[in-house]
Amino acid sequence: MQFIRPLLILTLAAIFSHLTLIVFWSNGNANSPYLRVSSLLEPHKFYTLSEDFGADILQFESQDLGYAVCHYDLNDQALVLNANINDGFGILTVYSEFGEVIFSINSRQTKMAHLEFALLLEGAENSLPSGMVFQRITAKTGMIIIRLAVSGAAYHERVAQQLASARCDVMKSSDRPNEYSD
Image (cartoon, one colour):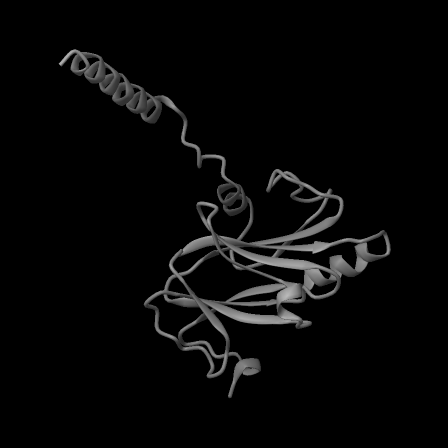
């Protein structure tokens, strides 16, 4: 019985502290990488980040990596990704708008010179060409980041070309590009 009052006071203090943090603490996602990317860049297009453009968007940098970023906003459409990540070491990661990793694939896993696949929302109609590789996702909005290793000055131009050639194109249910035809 003697512990009930201190336990009650401790519980009320914890609830009060929690509510105070929720009400008065600024939204942690207000300055998220996704919000920075989506407010500065148009969707469904890869942008190569460099010292001249977008170096502060993701708020992390490495002289040993080249970056490209694309944010997506899917409705009843698929997002077709094309990227070359297999020269040296590269990683393609798909994030939700909250920064959760939906999936990630690196060049050592694939042993393929070129990645081509689609992102399709859970429950959306699959109007992709037969045989096309796709990943079902639940996040309607998010971003894709490609990171390629720059192992020396000689690789800067090659990595820049690889990043510039990456594509994230929307394929609406009525679209069937000729390059994907059966």
